[in-house]
Length: 415
Image (cartoon, rainbow, N blue to C red; front, side):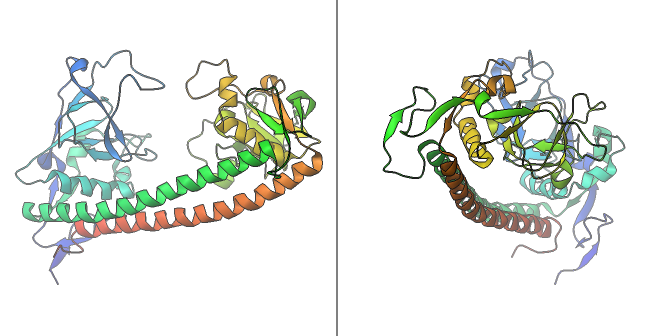
């Protein structure tokens, strides 16, 4: 058993006696090399999967007018996000590319006399795993300046051991990532399978031998011969309910859940100082998000509360669960996007004015219930399998984090 000593860093604990604790200023140099001609550089992005190449022509959403101020990134540079440490999805990454990146990040060059880039890539994965740097921030946005970063300390094994640890973790984490990738692919296949079952049932019914007819609506296609086609205004009633004093805020999420924010998460939302136009929502109301409906933000509320007027709250004498499934299928098939006149990227208006003029399938009421009951059961079965696989992913990711922690802090030694 190797001898250990106190590192002096509470969240690290003991480290081997021959390891050092050194200020970051001696380990890393913050690069300040600015791009002179962006056409000569590959655009890079810091993601949850590390540094990735990004195609300028394919960049969607908000893009800069020019790349003035962008920083040069060389192979084996570390790129760090030292702002919004409380909620930022990414913290650091080791670049395998030569290119340029946003001036919002810090580009670090490792002192190779005492530092191994790959070891410190894993070290910062450990630091980010529990957002340890957050406690050192003096700003409201949990941001650390370059000077503050340089004063912080890191664990430094002998460089030969750094290399051994990095090589070992490359192998072990590569194996873990391969398993996770396979499970993630299984989840994606199951999600596609669930979507195909829903689409088939809500557009063709449950009887595979039924005679079909042309609906004369391009995005609907053929439907069972006894089904009807109607505009939304003949199917749905648009509701605008008053709010109550004790109502909590309800959100319609892209996975179809319509629930109180307090039941799910409170972070990441824009809070309105004045709840102008807010409306009441009751349990069982059918809700279509006016901006995110195209992406699946359509569901039936499980709670009483209040919501922004951007949510369309609907009632119907038809089966709400059937129409929830149908509306989500239409969203995933791009019907709302195709009919949209909006110009914002990855959004489109799905407001009542448009929903009421769109044509929808209308099976017999009893058949609507049969389809909804069938889909409730089938989706529950598939979602149970998906939940099990997501639980596997979480367990494996926890194991990976603990593995990195044990080796970059010297709790375990590479044989």
